[in-house]
Image (cartoon, rainbow, N blue to C red):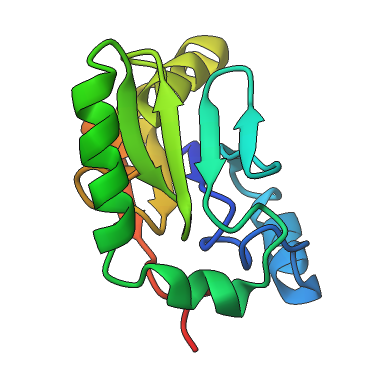
Length: 162
């Protein structure tokens, strides 16, 4: 049985940069009765120092979800920026995050790092964890969680559909 369910926040538990709705909050409350729950995510302005990473949000963190959904639906715009950043900054890890964001971290400081920290702090195995996220594709910010060895469940499209 799983001991820990780890969620991405934006696009997974709720719309980008929006509070959780009452149904999701109630479901999380009920889930906490049977398993430990953790959330790995971040929030902020157009360029934000999140401590563990620098995040560029093309439309800003507070842009309406409808605008974010339409800005780069095929990832082409952010992939061009990522390619340029990869070439200019080989010392950093560049990943696509959220709907309009690009995350810049030191190599290895990503959601896999967070999963390993949770394992160490809680003293549970990776087999006892499940990660749920909307960006589990290679190069996106949730992918490292799956690569860490936990069961990963993709939920793409729950909150970013028209």
